Image (cartoon, rainbow, N blue to C red; front, side):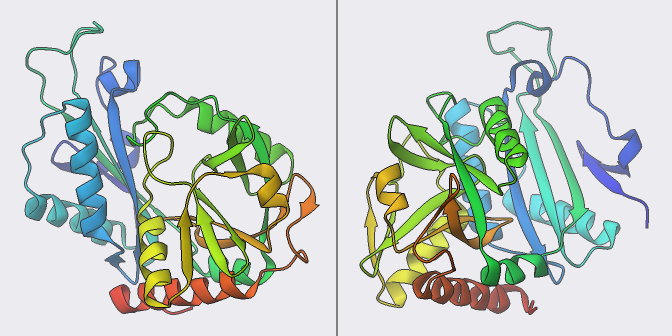
Length: 287
């Protein structure tokens, strides 16, 4: 089937999906975005993604009038038109098209685009057994990374360092404090307790992060939301990361040093099982 995209109310061939050169998302990164997982043709955690999208639009003062119901219908239409049962849908909303000026335009309707691409979620299940490696990088991003904007240059540069090092992800450091990954949240396990950086302006409040916190509570796994250092991470019993497209992946090495015994640990495995059970509950998807 042809690859199709959504642009301002129209589903078009991907090659013809275009915005004006003066779109503010292009010129200023004056835009927000969401990435949602689609498994078995069903969008995972759709309502939490919508809540975060609305919150981020409000933080930037972007006024977008489409209601959740019609927008969800448009997203599902695009997924169905592309014909992929397992995929990710990317949603971007910019302040609109206007003459280039730093100040907000007086009247410019937001530009809304969505794209869909096939995704192999089964690889994530396999990676629960093998684990992945991360490297560390200084956090050079702007001061409001809790808003999911398209201004991702710091994230992009960190991810490229990880790729060149043969690692899956880069964990971003504020001095010695681990904040999060370039596109994931960061976690460690010590003494049977999971630890992750608290929400605030320094990390993105991840949708998968919220699910893990809820599932851990239901399973009576102790949780600490507090900053942790790189030294703590290297001395941890286990570590893992989470995101919409990673779900939950064990971290077995940081900067070339083994975490624990260098294999996915029992608490990480247990949380992974719980998270994939939640995926099956919402979507019916099973590996």
